[in-house]
Length: 249
Ligand code: PGA
Image (tube, rainbow, N blue to C red; front, side, top):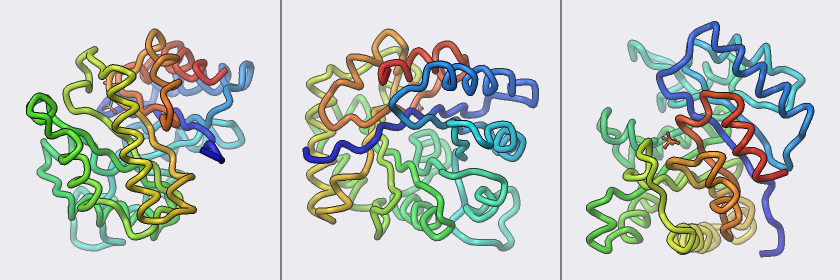
């Protein structure tokens, strides 16, 4: 590929973190300043921490993102947050369609697409997650499943878009696909994106997510068309997150 996009290592804190957790963010910022990786870094804390984290991270190389957004700008949607509100709080990105949202909150491809479009509308990077279940992988249906998710949830513009391939069975389990399996999926995703938009499709970052650790990051990040990682558990500790970022030393 002619132009490798600059990698992104993003941490998804899920429902972990209180005000005192800013110490981990500060350690990540300090670590990234002393040994700058050749990758963009981002932490996506719970929404309650976005504003305070964005203030702490201002002027650093660490960006702050959100974990979900509503598709509408505003309205009678108790408990929800719009992409515009997240941007106003200091987020520069938002994860959409994470498998936990899809499975535990019944989010469909249509809903995920609307959220990705909302992110673009608010001038946020959407980190759009797709991934197959273990049953789908065992049935040889991985590619068909991922293509269906891309067909259904890809926003109309690829500008600022990030895709995260996260096999559901690899999330939080310590299991990972082989580098060859990751390579096959990421190539399919790259070709799919190029078929939608030749120029933009080359530049979209395709992250791998699911049990990325300092121990396996180098091998996974070296796979062709892997342009970074979406990290859950290992992003909660600064040393582990920096250890993963160090794959891009
Ligand atoms: P994990 O989670 O790194 O803990 O497997 C990844 C994710 O859900 O984004």
